[in-house]
Amino acid sequence: MKLHREGYLIILIGVLILGAIHVGNYFLLQATGWDWLYYLLTLGEVVMLYLIVQFFRVPNRTVNAEDLDIVCPADGKVVVIEEVEETEYFKDKRIQVSIFMSPLNVHANWNPIKGIVKYVKYHPGLFLVAWHPKSSTDNERSTFVVQHENGKEVLFRQIAGAVARRICYYAKEGDKVDQGTEFGFIKFGSRIDLFLPLDAKVDVKIGDVVKGKLTKIGSL
Image (tube, rainbow, N blue to C red; front, side, top):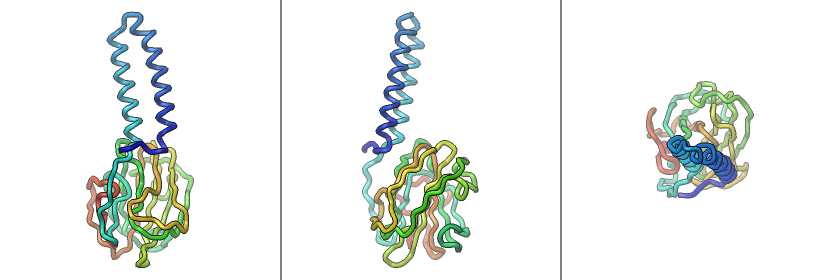
């Protein structure tokens, strides 16, 4: 387990703010006899710091998948599996698999397949709740396409939610990526959409709780 680099500054700011609040509470409450309220607020400060730190955790995981497997790009719950028209890149029908990430999930994102990054595009947008049907097309989002060596392509998209306010990504067009390597991070609640070929096998179902790098979404 380690902390993601995207969290260093936020954790530092959180420590400074909560530390200042704690000192203020000490002089205002404990020093004046309000011990019970001081300890209650101190507990709240500890819980808040824990929540901030755990959001940026990155567990140690090893990919154990076959060459044609599609591994889960994020922790969360499967909320959509359906055939849709993908309008940004493929402009044809694909199988969409969507994973909702709550603020309590790990928020690092990993490449679902190995191959060459063929497409990267960031879209500014709205901040609808991540499970809203239009969040995939109207919210702030980043789209990536990786082409496997067999020629098949998988599109995956980071989508900001009502709480998420920053999408971070590191992939560039032309990069050669391995299955399970990190391509990005989303801060505070979000969603990942995958668009798979129609002949892809899907091994998950709606409602499944999935783990990035560990859960097999399906295969090409």
